[in-house]
Amino acid sequence: MSKMTKKERFLATSLKLINEKGFKATTIRDLASSLNCEVANIYNYIDSKQSLLETYLFGISNEFHFAMDTIIDSKISSEEKLKLIIRTHIDLMVKKPYELALLVNEWRNLKEPKLSTFIAEKNTYENKVKTVIKEGMEQGVFRSLDLEIATFTFLSTLRWLHDKNTGYPIKMDPLEIEKQITQFVFSGLCID
Image (cartoon, rainbow, N blue to C red; front, side):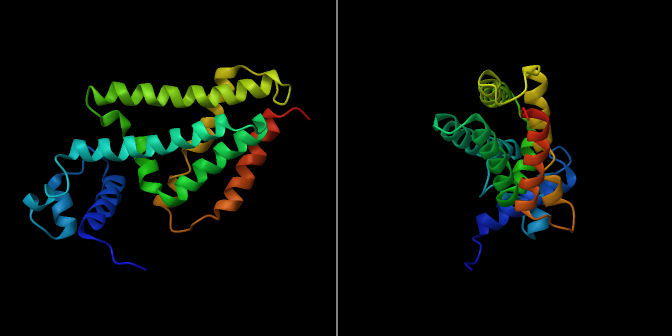
């Protein structure tokens, strides 16, 4: 296993600290203290605390959009697309739990014009999920439900995942999480 660079160590530490304290409560001084360095050294890695938040949020958002575009462009069924969306959320939860926590909990701390840009990206992502669910309803694979309720219930089912991977000592098996969430979602959405 390769040794972490100073920048990688800074990024990992900052993510963990922001997750523990919250973005607003975490100061540059806190970051410096946790890394055992001077405050001025932090600016070797970031321009500001706000730029750090922007980098993480837009980075993880781009990963979700890339995965979603690949899923939507595929020729697989709506049911399989929805399963891949669940798998994508779980994969990113396992690989990047702190970034996912920022995505769920801290996006409101962005400042304009980045906040408006992020909200537009968030809405676009939600609409992509809605498209997959709508397609399944139109094909008779999914129940005919209110599209808004179905979409946001589905997304809400996935949004808590980072909690189980960041703040709890017991790690859950990602395959078991995927299996149970898929069963739960499809028991409510699919036509028997």
